[in-house]
Amino acid sequence: MTLFTLASGRSGTSYLAAFFIKNITQCYSTHEPYFTFGNPTLFGKPIAWKTQHNDCALLPVLERKCRFIASRKTPFYFESNHAFLKAFNRHAGTLLNNPGFIHLVRHPLRVAKSEYVRDRMIRKLHVPFVDYTNDTGERLFRWALTGKEEVFRHYPVSLSRFQFYVLQWMEIEHRATQLIRDHHWQDRVFFIDVDVALKEEAVLKNMVDFFGLPHKPIFNLDLYRNPTPFIGPIILTEQDKQEFQTIARDLPERYKMLLQSKPYRDCSWFAEVNRLIIS
Image 1 (spheres, rainbow, N blue to C red):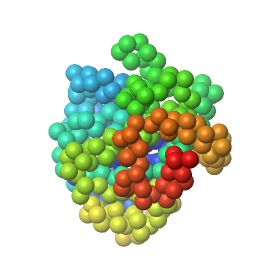
Image 2 (spheres, helix red, strand yellow):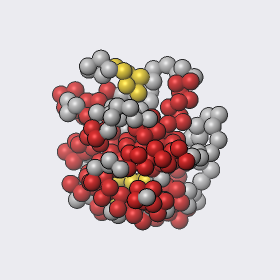
Image 3 (tube, rainbow, N blue to C red):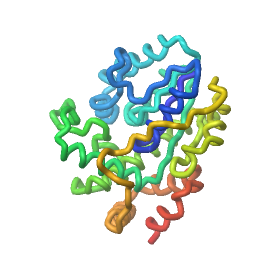
């Protein structure tokens, strides 16, 4: 079985990868496979190719990843890579053999604020190689959507970076639900409300049982949590909430309906976010 996370960045993918590496046996487990020969990360140009529907460039990369997965000698392959829904989702139905998914959903505004803060820190530190040049010569941030995806077409280019990341969360979740619905994969998905459940041993045990994963007898939950360096806890300000309300007014109806549907309406953060939308 091939397992991927359906998730935005800053949503517990590092923690889940550490859980698999320390606790799941007979499984090749990875997070974002940097420096792993033959296993593309899917960040950078594959994201732009997916948005541009440039399958001539994208498919060979996805097929190379699938060959890498098939070459592993373990019954299970797990990758907790938030690039999956940015680059792979449209071809998952034809390329993946016996897939399963762990759907990680965290408070959308906290995801956006965390991504914004990390983005700003990377720029301030002048970290190299964080941008790539797409096929039209535009410089883009390696780990984000391009800003040309459908949800962004309803907004001016003057969006704040925080608003950009809120809309990215919306687009990622739209892709997740579309992928599950289009392929009738509801019985292949285990959902986790990240804010309240990801670090709960009982939830992780249910996930392991759901997929029938072989595991060590006692879970090791002393796991890496990937905090943003030099930054304390993520705090939502009144300005953040106002910026969210500004874009919520023009949010296309299908994205509003998405938030009102399961599993989102059952999430721990739903009442807070819904109140901001309707006020």
